[in-house]
Amino acid sequence: MARSRNRIQVIMECTEHKDSGMPGTSRYITTKNKKNTTDRLELKKYNPILKKVTLHKEIK
Image 1 (cartoon, rainbow, N blue to C red):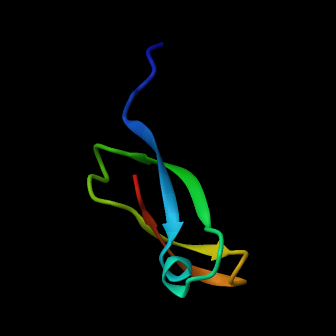
Image 2 (image 1 turned 45 degrees about the vertical axis):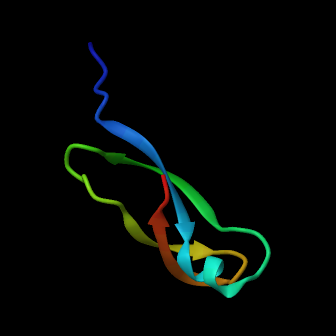
């Protein structure tokens, strides 16, 4: 059975952490279907450094 190549790995980075000026970064790796989701992802994920749920955007 052939494997579909529609799913790609993307890196999500916290927007609030980048603007705060604190050291370090909060990043997550996830996958998305590039045919169904052509624009960049925006998800709310937990940031362990800020200790709250923040908006993470796709950077790659």
